[in-house]
Image (tube, rainbow, N blue to C red; front, side):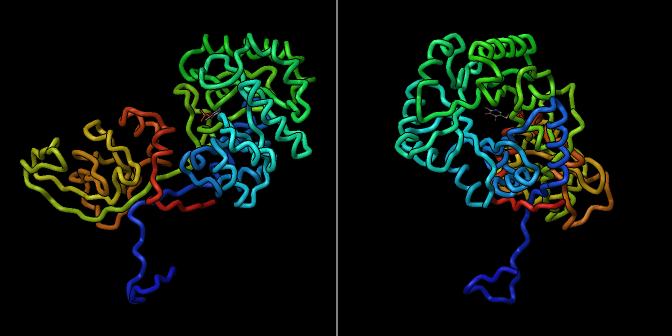
Length: 375
Ligand SMILES: *Cc1c(COP(=O)(O)O)cnc(C)c1O
């Protein structure tokens, strides 16, 4: 038990209203499925706190499992991984600020470069530090977010190779619509393969990577020897048709705080968008949008999982609480555990009812939600 200075010891710490159970065995299972998919090495994408699952904790598991790289969004995330004692190679997925590059060189993190200027800057810093920095080239085959254009790269390649401080050890590109546009994605793959060939292929580029989760589950990745899955590691397939035998890692839970019966004609929640038409047994649950449960599901038929079955949410989700219709059940009691999504209720369903994507639901779970690690 944690002790709080100045608080009378006769009061125990209150247990959290909302928590997320994170299942490491499911995580390991999903990683194995990712490795199987194409038989390539894996860069586990752990940006945004491992998609809300907990950066340090998941980085440790991926390190134990021997992934080739951990993919992060920025230097702050890279620092946290090192401070957690994880030594796996770190790849920076996005562009870096000039002011961050000296640290990147000093700590041997691996950036992807999009311009000759960036590459020159890194090279100069590495020279000054008396080392050669391993970098990857980013190629923009259609994402429009960063990278050399494929038609420009062969022209600047000799300049890049002449940079003494750099070892160009890899090349990567990104797929914007692997989950919705097969023809475009296949075109990107062809472009990528073509540019890799023009730079000398595997002989010159140790790591070649293109696939996110959708690219890994939905396509062969010829010529690539590394993939960068995120979402599928957390147990969700981005492809409706290809569930891919994945297991949900996060189960978001709360408890019933109150059960009452309201008469017909009584409004429930803000705006009174729902009004009872019959006597209704209403359970109040201790989670809301302040925990990251999406308010936008309100009125769209979202359900929760409780005592082994589904019950509908009534009216709008509030900041800290939401209400559920439990009229059909006579075994519901205060303190009952409620699953908002996870093992029994697919998070994809909640994202769809909220008009958003699973990535946003995961990364929106706020720090107020205690993460509990199992398995
Ligand atoms: C986020 C990201 C990924 C992982 O994408 P998922 O769809 O979650 O698998 C891969 N590559 C890059 C460059 C990314 O930014």
